[in-house]
Length: 306
Image 1 (spheres, one colour):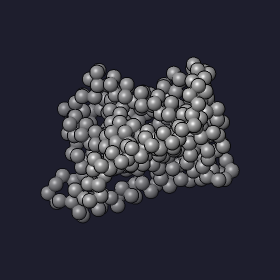
Image 2: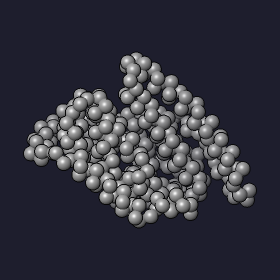
Image 3: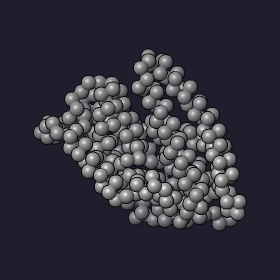
Image 4: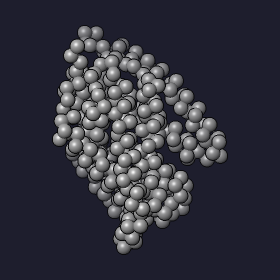
C-alpha cells in the first residue's frame, strides 16, 4: 500500500473529512429561516416531487444501459441486473466516506460475474473518466463566459474531442499495463467507450441534472438555468475524492457555487434548498438499492453459461 493510499484510508482522515463536511454544512445553513423553508416546501407544486423522483430513477436506468453496453461481450446482464448493480454501487458511494463505496463495483462484478478485480477496476476508471468528460462538456455549455451559440459550439467541439481522445488514452494505458504487467497473468481487456456508451452517458447526466434542478428551481426561487447550473455544481462537488458520508456539506457548497454563478441569490435559502434536494436523491438511491436487494436482482449470476 502506498503512503498516499494509506493516508486516504486512515480513520483519522475519514473522521476529519466528515467533521469538516458537517461544519461546512452548518456554516452554509447558519442563516436559514426554518419557518420560511417550511413555507417554500409546501408551496412547491405537487407534480414537481414525483417528476423529480422519476427523473432520478430514469437516470439510474440509463446508467444501467451503459453498464450493459460495457459488459455485453462478457456477461449475461439484463436490464434488471444492470439497474441493480448501478443502484447498489451508487448507494455505497454516497453513504461511505471518501468514496469508499467505489469498491462495490469491483466486488460485485468479481463475485457475480467472475470478472478479475484488476479488469473491473480498469472498467470503473474508464466509466469515471467518461463521466468527468460529460460533466466538463456540460460545464462548458453553461459556465463558459461566452454567448450561448459560442458555448454550445464549444461544448460540441469538446464532445468530439472526448470521443476521439479517450480511445487514444486507453491505447496508451493498455500499453503501460502490458509493459509493466506480469507476463504470466491474464491480460486485461481495454476497450474504449462505444458510441452507445456515450449516448447513455450524455442522456443519463442530462436527465439527472434536470431532475435535480426542477425542485431547486421552485425551492430557491431561482431561474431554471441557475438551478440547472446549481445541479451541475453539486455533481462536480460530489465527484471530488474527499467526501464525508452522504457527501453532506460539499454537495450543498457545489450547488450554491453553481447557482451563484448564474444568479445572485441568498446563500442560506439556496443551501437549504440544496440540502432538501440532496436528501431526496439519497432517499431515491437507497430505496432503489433496497428494492433491488429484496427482489434478488443484486445477487443474480451474470456469468455466461453457453
